[in-house]
Length: 471
Image 1 (cartoon, rainbow, N blue to C red):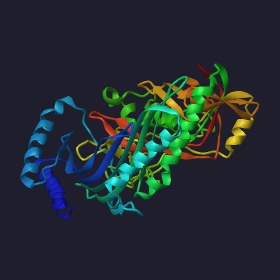
Image 2 (cartoon, rainbow, N blue to C red):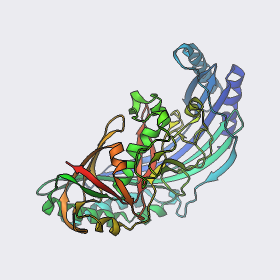
Image 3 (cartoon, rainbow, N blue to C red):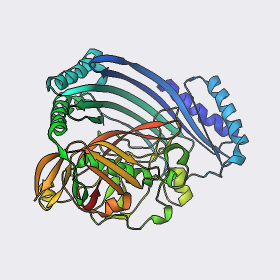
């Protein structure tokens, strides 16, 4: 990307000459591959190689964004002229945008690969999907729907701003997604995702054939012999996967400052949270939820965000108190704080917006067994088959996939699809203890218009909810 660096610098210089007060340019080059197996048949696969510029600028209080994959000066000059003219013409439609004052950074970083992605053949990747499909069929369970997807990418990004920040990053990424329909006396659908930054060694570490074979056997047993889910007020133990999706959906999303300020309502929903709720109680003393992009090899890893702000751990809820929101430079300036490095774009042709990274519930000091042994009658929810949450992130629903009855402190019979419906404040106030068995799970978080799917982790430990209503 050496010669293209000059193009990025040229774009900044040209916009400043036009009168822009701030310019930020992201030059990205991504190579990758993806393969899809449906019911044992290869449906698609291919190699991706794309490169382009994303440019954001501030002029006369109006912010503009443009992108192009034409990396020559004349093409860039032409598109900048058109975008700058349009931005100035629409000034009367927009608020006066300001950005928070931030530290300038110059740094290069990369994620190491023990097994380089470029050294793994397409045949090996397809064979892995076929092996997974084969072990699923070998369970003898009825699995009429088997959707398996494997992808990898390596992105080199050069971010430069008119203030002097220059960040170069190289991030390889691997991802696996599955969606299964398991049938029998009843039917159940199950999907989940694996994802990390790094080389092919992580795909090997996931042990996907063993994981999916075991899951199909367990869920098939629940379909055939799981008892009807009890209803009413009871205690529930939610395992890390469910804790993670709860934290992501009912804390991470409503704590995005652009959503709080109403700027995402048309694209991705609203928030029941308001700026003046900082410092108020939303949960019990046992609830501590963070967002941290700096975790090595995590799915949502980065050291600098798409505005060149250093990544940091954000404590969103501390001991049940709303402590911090997710900010970019625009929302930070609007609310009188500093950005906490939460600006992300999925590709060079998407504008950076406020996003999560790795959002999780912090672990406690109990073992999972200790959470269970103190319950007389309750439900143990290992994972889920379905979840729903409203646009404001207030009312939510989780339907268990693998779940069990708890009786007198012991795990008993499998339970078929228990349903928890609860409002966000009631959820977090019902938590009385967290275990020490933290897990992180991968996700692809959606937000924006056009839609941006961003890699994230979500997770935490098992948590115990007291006296919640099962439907």
